[in-house]
Image (tube, rainbow, N blue to C red; front, top):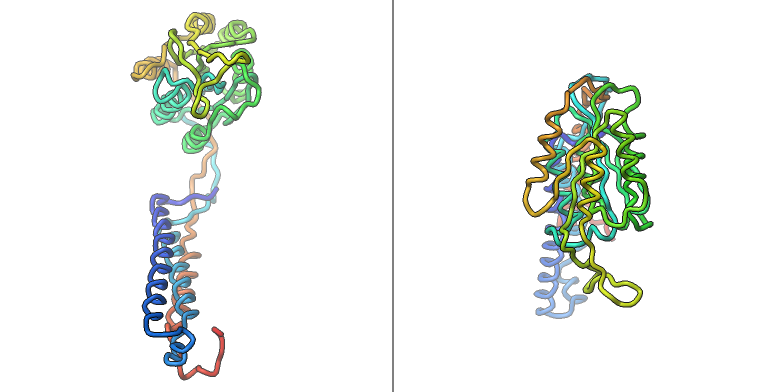
Length: 337
């Protein structure tokens, strides 16, 4: 496994495009000022030792050195020892609705974005637990297999959008069934499913799937996103419309969400513009009994900063011997013609 010990230092790479823009601006100013004295072809004969190519080569060597320096101080590392560790935790599978109705903004900034914000905060509060992520609309797909890698979980979470599942609909039952099959096999840790949906246009036996989960000792908690008054679904500069041109209004099916939670032995909370739903969900997770969870993690890392370090020294030496002007001692050697 590859990682940087200090990934925040990689922001220093943003200096490179800034320096490039500044360099070309300075070169433009130099050329413009020289043109005031006459034709460039004639001026070159008056400045035989001047070399624009050398200036470019020297600059690009400096940029390479800057990039290597940033990589070096960020401390690249490779995982060298993979160990199995046992920690006290639970397993959580999240089923997130990504149907088009989740674009509605009756919950700010939108139903989907609000759901992602809640999940991001939930992940931040996890300790030694495993988490998995399923997205669903008309069908269900595993976005992230069950894992204790919270960095990857947040990365996958940020990339979720409504175009991930081409088939529209709300296949809640399929998502719950997939979640049941996605827990770690043979693990004795307590497990739970978190369903986040507006519950609209559900098209399969969601309550039957929730009952199956409850019979296996797995609670199904439901967060309902949206309002009962409903809201149109944004599409570009307009809103989604039906075949007759009428604006489509989407509403939270709170009754159905409550029924799924009751059948699945879990709790139901409506997600609005407050953090009440997150607090209620966190409270339920804290009630779960922590048991031994097996994780495979890298316990030792080999430092690889020496590689960019030696390359940095190499290019610095080359940059030192490349002068802005032609060296008269080596004037007969035409490396930069």
